[in-house]
Length: 258
Image (cartoon, rainbow, N blue to C red; front, top):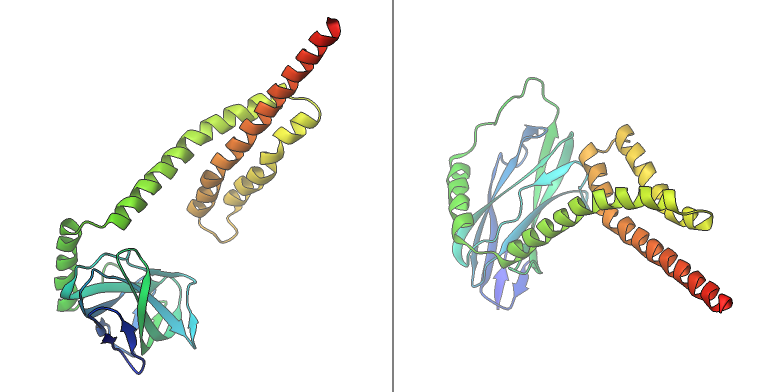
């Protein structure tokens, strides 16, 4: 058993593991302009590969509005340093940093925290990247080499799933439009009402994407794209039920005629 140490609360693990939030750029009590990144250096010793996820808190509450951070990267086993960063796109103050420790399967195995007072504020005439500490540039180069040398099965599966879902969305859109137009033209009465059900959800989403309601257009587009395969499946089921109904009516009329 080894102790995972930072601050007052140790976390125990069933393997050799030691993690410490060693440095930040800028330091405690500093400020940055919104959209600028606070860099974090995590020193660790571990028998297994690790992934670190970073978050910020204020008065014990996790801050998620306008928060962004670097994509979690698999870190090799051994004794190394990892680079992370967080930022906010609106004025925000924090009083605590936390680092979640995950294994290669993205299962949480521990967490460290550190009191850390910091402020992101609006600043006029801030352009380009700010100067970075020397250790940030060194770790950026190290992380680039890590990405090319480490095989991450979890990320490979995630990318494959994302590619599949994107292809499914891409194919579903024209098929849905064609089937929607066809069923509205072909069906009558209650069957047309059933065929029009997807429009009840998709039309408001399209209109909302034009207005925005404070959400970026790309998020509305994602909602629409991800919903298209489901409404396509629904329309296919309705169309198959309609065809079955027609077949049953023809069989019944044929039997009556005989």
